[in-house]
Image (cartoon, rainbow, N blue to C red):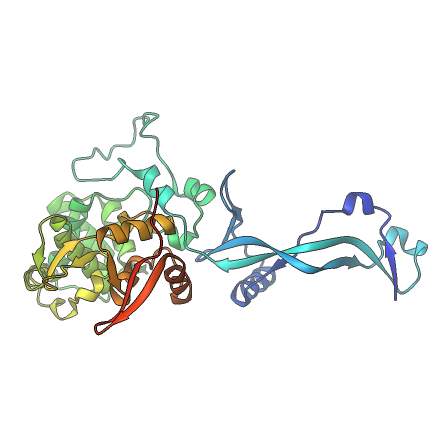
Length: 359
């Protein structure tokens, strides 16, 4: 085999990048090629680290230096093949780094900031015939797909959120209407639910249908409720009122069961609210609202805030507040190793701040 330089080596230099793919993404790309299904693209504005988004996952892109250079070679171009030996391969470029993809946490915090003040509630005029003002201009799903560093699935439930108090009321209505119409939460008629909510409670059909899609699956005119997701939101609706004044765990559970009714009270579980509350150090049965979603996204600031809130944490207590900034337990443990110091006493392992945070 003869190695030959390309006639266009001056223009080919730097034109090639090697991308190392995780096995699941490799299979996805191979399937997309076979079925001619489009994949999402690289996202990132100036000043942002680039990510690659598929329909359901986000991957960070980083450059990894190689200890040895690699040559990019191809067969001779047809037009110039006569100028090369029969067994020649053409050197087109050399690379000293590869691009590595790793699963990443979607960057939804920018979407939250964009949508702030645009929450829908029952007092909002739903007539869209008038042109919106510049400040209230509609931010569409397509806008989000182009600008927010997250996959389609990860963007679900994030666009134009409903005001929490209105959402709480809607979910209670859903549960009541299911009982009133004797509908199964496993296969409820979308038409029957949306009609009842529109006629009896003045809930626009577009809103009720959207909420159904958030808390379950709609297929062939039937809604299959995601019980845990809906119950979690109902529980949060109670917990939100206890940001400063704690609520006893028994009282929370009792109110929660009362709201969801006999059908679902056996499914009520405090674990559904993990990452949204703190138990008092002196009284573990006393809970306050403390949502991970309100904490800084930056890992250093997240740990600083956590250790300002509580100087030391048990692993099982701090872990729920790291799940939205770590893609898995391995990544979470790396963050703990970097930003916290582990100490052991008679009560087990505790985490304390590793360094003072200067802001």
